[in-house]
Image (cartoon, rainbow, N blue to C red; front, side, top):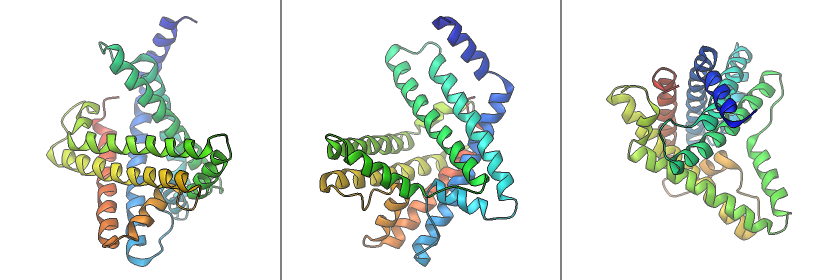
Length: 267
């Protein structure tokens, strides 16, 4: 199959109603997960416990409630179809975009494809009664990476990439660049929530990246535990409760914005 056939097939798949409604379900599922993560972060801030403030913690929290398994299967379907939609976007690209923008968008869409496919897989494991801590998995991944040639440098590079992603989130929120993802203006309230949410999530990701850089420099996996570890590190700082509370509110804002994407996203 040549390139035009691949692009044509991807475009037809991406434009189908099943993918559109599935992707919108995925955005809504992402919103729910971020709201649960925000609630867990608040519990951590004010009770020194509360579970794991990351995707696995949110999935586990959902699984523990009545009807949670059913909701998790909705998350699986939504995340899987959202991943498939991003894959079609990576293949087809934005019509009329120049080669530089198209390459950037393709890389971004591929990364989102991997992320949402991973969330679909994790949600499926929790829905089937399994599941594991993403903090432990992240630490194990870092440990294996450090055992490779130039492993410490690779961990530092991973951290710098994550910092870059966090910085991009902050930039996208500050400039309201996310409006390009919307098919229509959702109202000033949603735009304000999106702005706060992107900035807060970017700050949290940047902290994750800094911990990877520090871990690579010190050859330790103690603090390379992903988002949950980053938020708990934030709690240990002066005015930690206040800082973590503000970030949790920001994550909740991102969750509400994601829920709005289920209606307003350009799919």
